[in-house]
Structures are given as C-alpha cells and as structure tokens.
Length: 349
Image 1 (cartoon, one colour):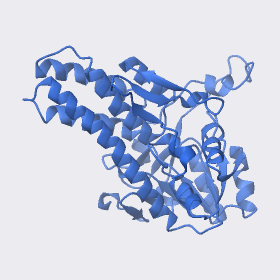
Image 2 (cartoon, rainbow, N blue to C red; image 1 turned 135 degrees about the vertical axis):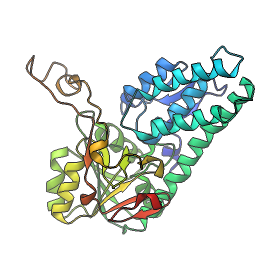
Image 3 (cartoon, helix red, strand yellow; image 1 turned 180 degrees about the vertical axis):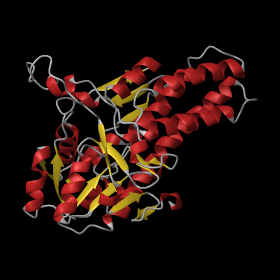
C-alpha cells in the first residue's frame, strides 16, 4: 500500500489502551492532528462532530471507545458491570443514528459481555479488547477485498467520479469506494478521479482530494453541481461511492447528494457502483423509506465556512446529512463477499 496513506492511522488505541486516538478530520487538510478520547462524552462528541467519520471508522471508534470506557467502570459483580456497560452503549449509539456500523459494532461488543456472564470483570475487559481489535482487522481485510472485487469491473485509464469521502480516512485501510483507486494506483492503472466537493461539510474537498493528492493519484476537485458537465464531456466512465446503510431491497443511504449523482449517471449511461462491507447491509430494514435520516444544524449551511454569515438572519435552512439512492439506479453493490446485481438478493452475501 502507498506508504504515505499507510502512515495515516485514522483510528487506533493508545499504547496503554486507556484512550482512543483519532486523526481529527475536521482539521484537515490544514493540519494533521491526533486527539485522545478517554471518556464516553469525548467519543460521542468526536463521532457526532465528524472528527471521526465514515461508517466503518465510526464502528471501529465506537468499539474502541466502549472498551476504553468499560475499563473505567467501578464494578466487581457482572450485573453491576453490565448495567453500566449498557448505559455507555446506548449513549454512544445515539451519536450517529444513520450509520449501521456504529450500532453493529456496539452490539458485537455487548455480545462479548452477555456471552460470558460467569467471567470476572478483568477477563471481560480482555475479551472486549480482543473484540475491538478484531473489528478493526476485519474491516481492513474487507476493504482490500472490496477493492479487488470492484477493480475487476474497471479498466486502466478510466475516469472515475466519487462523492463524499469513502477512502482511507473513512475506514482502517484503503477505504471502500476508493479501495479500487488505491489498488489501481499500485498496479499502474492510471485512473483519473473527479472528487465532488460534497456540500455542506466538504468531505470531498477537505478529505478525498487531500488523501488522493497526497497518495499521488490524479485527482480533480469539482463542485457538486459540476458532475453533470464532466459526465457530458465523456470524462467519467464509472461512479464509485460508499454507503452508510444498505436496506434489504438494495436502497442505499449515503452522504447527501449521492442520489443526484446516481440520477445523472443513469442519464449519461455511466455505471454507478456502491461499495461497502456486508456489515453495512441491514436486512432488518426493508427499504430506504425505513432509514432514519439525520438532520444537522443549519449553521453548517449558513455560517460554517464563511468569515461572516452567508445567509439572511432568520431564513429557514434544511440540512439532511444523507439521502437515499433507489436500488433502481444502482448498477452493482460491491462487498468483500462479492458483487450483487439487480434484482438485489443481499441475504445471499
């Protein structure tokens, strides 16, 4: 893997396992700053405020976070320990309700506890530590496999458009949507990537353009409303995006603006690929209408990136963090276990 990108450790435990260490993504690209999270409030704040973001990275941060916080529980008896554990779990789960990896990781950690009611607390902590590391290792392996599966559908020299950030910064290694780009770069494919800036939080401009440029990938930053013209010019032969939740019917929740890109890709006859680990598939969610869409502060639209407010005082603002792309617009859903084509039967993956 590119050594520059490999050096960016998005989420990890401190050497003494007393804190979660994250690369603070809201300070990129201006500065690379790692921050230490040693309390449930700090982990919650980091996830909610997008200091750590990307569905897999959120799950890893939550797993590490609940382990770190469990070490601080003052309880000798199992019932007392489990009661406090659940309080922490429910609190962390409330930080980003749309990302299924968050709850999935926390549920895995809970099963470690409930599966060993006769174990002393010290042994439970050892098992929780091992499970959190397993969640990270599984993500790294899944991301590489996702990249390999998608790369089988791409050709050298292709123009690829992506939305938001589904690269190394969003996971443990390689990324989801950007995994085939990194693998292709290693193998001389020479992809030309167009990165949507991704309003209003600019994950494409601040993060995707940053990590791809740093890795030596040919990347061009465009405003979200420029996707149509670069497609019309014939500069894009594939669209690759990540996902925060995949419903049982193949509908996909991803960063706001993704569904618009899918509509444009359909109009111009460009394959639209969704890449994500199977942990992102929620078979209990029948369709996109059942996905809870997080709505964020209007300040992200009106104030966040400006030296002075860029909208009239008192004006209403609507700021959903995600939208849902209909399965009808998706060419393929690519996971570590294979490639699913319409009609999507995701329970087979």
